[in-house]
Length: 181
Image (cartoon, rainbow, N blue to C red; front, side):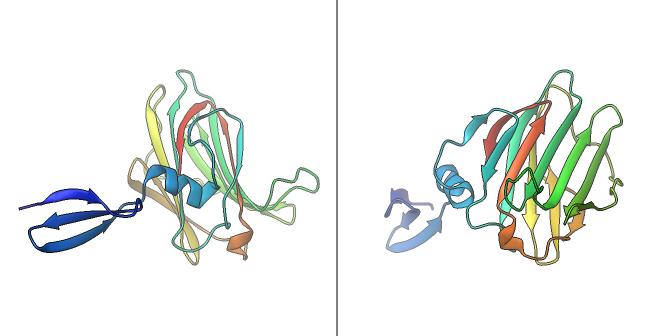
């Protein structure tokens, strides 16, 4: 039988079941936002959007982008970059581009001004016009793992060697961003 739920110090939940005490760590949306992007609001971001990734990327860190595709979408771009410079342009660790007319989800990188070849194979096109979506970018030692709506679509191997230098996320396109984490 589950006991009552009692807040401990604000960061953990404590479930008390009779004489036993079980601690359940719950990472709340606000603290997740702050741990990834620093302090600030987390909902309803306008595009184009650019924000800092607190501490840069590292194995085990993930970025979540939730939103709604526009009724007549053209494209969606999500990029993780090393800074926010325009000239000279920052390295792009990964650029994800959804092209709705072609039903493609493309990924590529740019290091020292040189773009990699586009990678295009996907099992299916995951985005639907006027519908919500959830993109997760999981950082691992050798690659990013990309999930859309809970399904793994592909891996993208790192071209940028210093993961902590990947400290900026940029989002643009035919979407409304409802949540970042």
